[in-house]
Length: 415
Image (cartoon, rainbow, N blue to C red; front, top):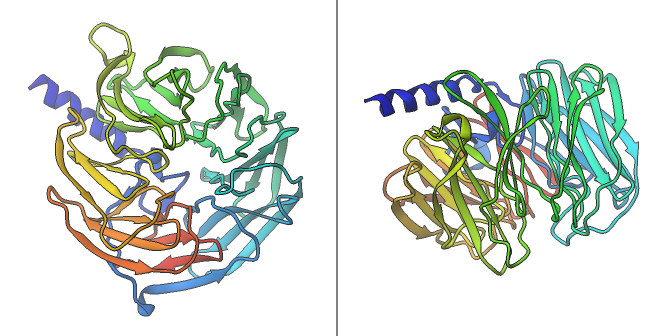
């Protein structure tokens, strides 16, 4: 009975992050990836609220606050970086700001604008970087530039794709770099001044977006994932390291791309290599373990995702692999509920799944929007063929779905 009460308390704390009209970071509130309203399983012409053709490209996902959608874009092969604001009702650009940057080497599937903005009730925060700069900007929702910082370079041949998050007035910018070096930063949201900077011996460029874990006592910690270091916990306001647990395979180089999520008293993280092992590991943070130390609880290593992030819905955890194989398990134990392959799509999935009501959506790299039922049995509901390259994750806010493709920003009306 005590265990049930504890888990109920955790779910209540997690629900405090949720605000239906906002989607303030990659995968929404604390990376949870869910909303209570419904979206049509298959999209017809009448389901589109608006389509905005984009002049610049990028794979970063949209973020939403109230009546505004924010996203990053780039042009001239990375020489111009742009922060863009679009009205949720009109589908028209309200403002944009451009910044000079430079071309640099990226992975062939990456872009020069793969980062998702972070939002609070006042500002939008954007990040981009290359070998000689790591730029962070803060604009008001109306487009006024508040501050701009250069935190230094980013080493890694695959290019930049890290997304920041906001927690209690602190902008958290992860920056694990290739072959060691880099640092995680905590910046003051109002001024941009550095509150803390934590050097990292990371060995590999990392793309995962951190999450916030809050214990029943109300203490919060930032959880990062990285191949070499595993799970790292930092105190949000000081950057003090609380604990670290290395759990991923070290014999071969791996990379953390998928983002960690909170599941009750566990944090779930993924790491792996494209053609080698991929690990989903569930750990219990030190603040809630019986021995006061972070500990591994369970793991899965068969047909796990590398790029898509896990999705939690009640007592179901969805692991949507890049190949289109979906594994549904119980989040507290890893016990398999079902496993199935998406039908009618022979493509890779770079975006992460999201839940709208009782449906789950994930978009393939060539623009097939797959919907399945949120259920203890696998049921594919339909496929919407957009016909455009898409390597981003949908946003859910204001009762609508927002999707960024290589060519357009799309708004789908909720049911």
